[in-house]
Length: 360
Image 1 (cartoon, one colour):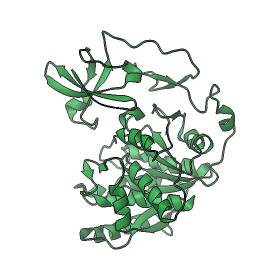
Image 2: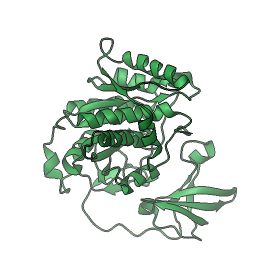
Image 3: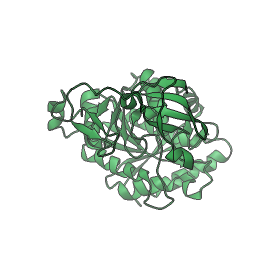
Image 4: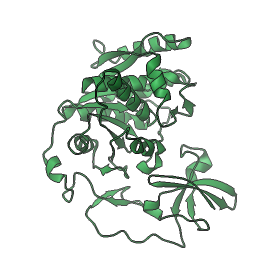
């Protein structure tokens, strides 16, 4: 075994198996610190099927060096419930939390902009757009909280993006909700996660998206991004400003994801029952991107008044925004494609961030 890169909450390693060498990932908070020479029990289920675990086997345990029992402490929120590796955490909203009193009767986001995106890869682009907008307007950089839902990875530790955005100050905090865990704050639901972002983190705007990974079956309703509509509803019922960051692609070979993905058209158009701002980038674009941008606008317009319930928001974009995207502290990648390969995917997310920053 050899050790690789380590980031907040996670440790890369290379493990020798009967079938050869595999890349693996350990979460020290669950299995303890891994050392060279340790025997490890690996879960290779998704790796063997070529599914979206980032190419990792996952360390289940170190059979010869089990971690010490956790120290007694407050918190009785169980996440990953009734699985062998369920985690006991202190919920920001539970009775033992120092923030319980602030959240007990909390019911109002007071117009807080809440950008909801389908894929985790949209998060740094939304943040980049918001920061760029503030700098363009000579306004203070916004305090941004990320509310991570449980549609993809459950441990926030899996995301190097979140770790880097936290380290660089691009994100003020990560709040893990539902069965997701490992954030700076833990919450039971999207609702209390949003309220904690405002009342505990002091966020100026919030980004909601699932963790890395995305479950889809090629059917109208069988995909984890359905939760986008539910999060938009949560933001609205709490008096926030729900903003939909559409999933867009000009490079996906699948027709259902061309332009505005069917994921966004279903989640925003059918599941989101409360009115939201639906953001599209507009302006001159090179080559085929001009036609793609027009297609995206037409598809988004079908979700908006008078045909739908939402409001279309057009955000003019240019080269400066793409330059800001190129300067993010993390590598932008969506479905294996970077900024150069699928620029409109990131520009659409960044435009939602621009609108959110201007709405605060």
